[in-house]
Length: 231
Image (tube, rainbow, N blue to C red):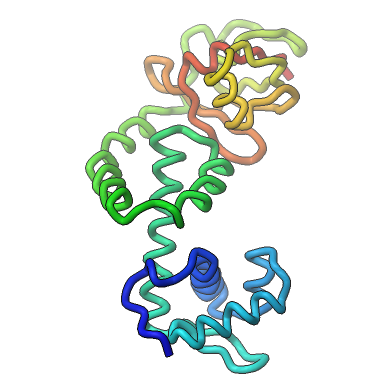
């Protein structure tokens, strides 16, 4: 049995398995090879080999065809991995304003390559600025903006920033160039997607949208370069 004392001794692939086991146990109290295979979208034989390795390392317990459990050490490391993942996702989504799906994808990509020093600094930053983040989000409300009484007809085109609370539109184009254009489109604001304005800060910035089933906070200057068609 390997003597694992630090998270860096666990390969990124096995860290993903630990996190998947923990999520399965937290959600259903049961973890099986089938569960882990489905969560990580890998073949069952590959999952079986990885769980066997975790068993050998003293991080998991798994009898043939039985349920998977985490040892005390395995649970500790799994929760560290999960916390790191969630912190990164929070930073990307809440502080940088990335769409949830993009924040989730990039958090997965970053979490295994980030150094301990950078991670510690990021933890401090998020903790020190969480109140500022909360204030920004709380300022987004559901009250109509000045000018919401302007009549809109289906098919009218306007800037996304001019769409009132409750208004829905379909993205026609993104007028920005280069980096800003890529950033906006990476958030999911691409031609053809439907959006709804669900909230706006008192001074009109930021604006809260719903698209494709998730919420997105957008700065006013970003919304101004997006042309939408009223639906």
